[in-house]
Image (cartoon, rainbow, N blue to C red; front, top):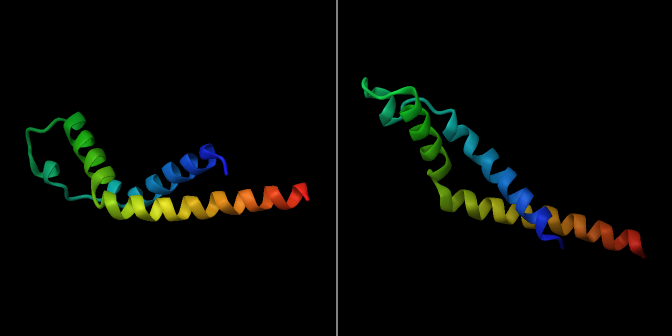
Length: 80
């Protein structure tokens, strides 16, 4: 099993699971009138990536392990 496949799968699945939180409107920073666009963007991105991080990490690990093991199994079959 290649670690590159696992890491690429983990990152892509984690970002895919973070998309709903990244697109959510109604963060606390949205209601602060003095906040700049950069502060709002930073608040939304950081909050979207860190919200439910443990659950997303566990799911991303399980899914990326499954995918990388599936690719590994196919590579082993082609050799025989």
